[in-house]
Amino acid sequence: MDNRELIRLALEAREKAYVPYSKYMVGAALLAKNGKVYQGCNIENAAYTPTNCAERTAFFKAVSDGEREFVAIAIVGGYQGAPVNYAYPCGVCRQVMMEFCNPKEFRVITAVSEDEYMDKTLAEMLPHGFGPSSL
Ligand code: THU
Image (cartoon, rainbow, N blue to C red; front, top):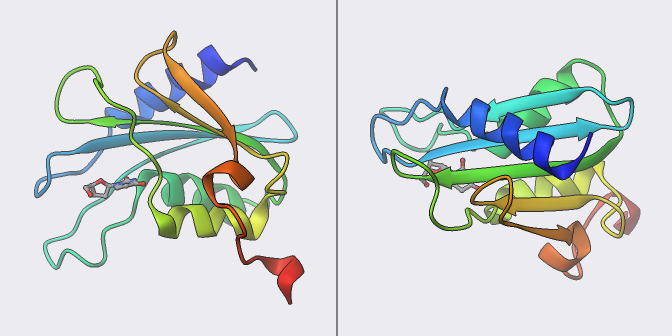
């Protein structure tokens, strides 16, 4: 699975975003070590705070299916139409990644298209993170 294909799957997931309030559509595609990909979109709520980000939707789908080992996540976001800017993962989503991923190995791919993307480690995205090895 290359970066292009993972980004394509994130773009596909973004089409399912449930965003009646912000209208900001986010899609994520999470690659597990066994090669399976879990797609996620953001899911908003009239009470606002129950809103779930696309990245966490993908992680929670995967973990609830028994996955515990991950390679990379591709993330795309923006208002209707093709993304124009990088949609960086929020702090809460970075912390969820920290729970299940080796920060020096897990890659966070933020993309505007299959050709234009940034590929960083979780350690770069969340320096000095607090995770399971801290306890
Ligand atoms: N959102 C995500 O899905 N992922 C992020 O990392 C940042 C924010 C969503 C939440 C909300 O539905 C919309 O984007 C605007 O904040």
